[in-house]
Amino acid sequence: MSLVILDAFDTENLIEKALKNLLQKRGETFFYFKLKEMKILACRSCGACEIKSPGKCVFHDDMPEIMRAIAPGSLILMLTPVRFGGYSSQLKKVLDKLMILVLPLYTVEDGHLLHPPRYGKKSLLVIGLTGQNLPGEEENFRLLAARNALNMQFTHKTLLFTPTDPMVKIEQEIDRVLCEVKPG
Amino acid sequence: MNRKRLLLLNGSPRKAKTSYVFARTIKHLAEKKGHKAEIIHIIEYFDEEKHFDALKDIILPQDILGLITPLYVDTLPYPVIWFLEKLSCDLAGELKGKEFFAVAQCGFPDADLLHPLLESCRYFAKAVEMRWLGGLGYGGGALIDGTPLEKLGRKGKKIISAFTSALDDIVEGKNISPSAQGLLTAKIPKILYRPLAAFLNYRKKREAYLQGVSDADLTRKTYLENYKL
Ligand SMILES: Cc1cc2nc3c(=O)[nH]c(=O)nc-3n(C[C@H](O)[C@H](O)[C@H](O)COP(=O)(O)O)c2cc1C
Image (cartoon, rainbow over all chains, first blue to last red; front, side):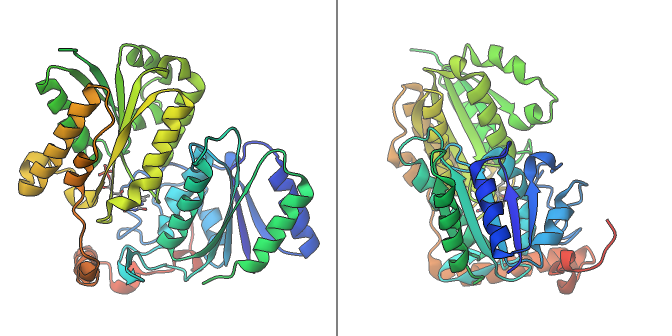
């Protein structure tokens, strides 16, 4: 399993620690991207990545580094605080640019109109950290992660933790889920 | 009549496309009813063409804020989330007690896809203690691609009447009634998805061909190739 971690937390946190601990124990190799430290320009919806420059953004930023890890990889792991029942802007800056993981063409799968994947099917694990969230935000977060997986035709799992969850619990949960997610 | 002031936030980085034509229509409809409305582009604050600090004076006299935005990967675009995060950090006091609504549109012809985005807008409103008036979703905004609604015939008329009905509620501080969403929802039967996909693929491949890009190029696995940055 080749693993790419997109960490949208601004500072070091429990999830990052637990995850790194676990991956070390499992002897897993992985790419770790601390998104705050990366220069990722916002998608301008210019459309160039569809035809003019297929599968590649024409603006120069750090996306190629991430894409070179993701394209051959099988599992994308996204870590984010839960913001307004969704992702933080730090994660979204990359996610908007991951539309190049799909082709600018259309297909119908299980009654859904979708774009075919450019690099085959992968798995997505979304890990959220709830803060002072309102009732319903967690469900919306889970729904969003499920929609992303459908959009990209990936298999997926979602985990949500609170800041008071002990490290061992976080490690165990991630360990369990890592065994379950397999590229579709 | 109680004249209201509306601030419409265009969430698209493209300043003259579908989100903008929706915002422009809502602005005109509000003005026709005697209200004041202005449009600002979030991308100008994101790009620091305009100072975020200046927003305080813009927001203070407003009664109602409305976000008009496209869907990006199943939720709000990055610059919009950035903007809402910053509003909630820096201007929550100024926003408190005002009213908020959202109109979202997406590429695929299915307004249900906009649900998580509209829910995020509702949670934002709650977080800054604004009064959430509700959201509207339109599936198929990519096909409009910035064409003024007046030029869209029957489809445009339906969208305008949905906005008119929603605006009646909005300026009275009422929740947007479900009938407005009813006017906006034009669900394509799933049985038509396959011919639609075939038609869209034909169009895209032809567009590519005319630009000298072959089918093989279009589907390149760019990041598995050796290439120079
Ligand atoms: C990065 C990106 C991601 C998008 N993701 C989706 C999506 O998940 N679902 C969808 O239906 N449309 C999606 N779209 C299409 C836009 O929502 C659609 O084209 C919209 O009409 C653009 O609005 P605008 O004209 O105001 O810019 C996406 C577009 C871009 C550029």
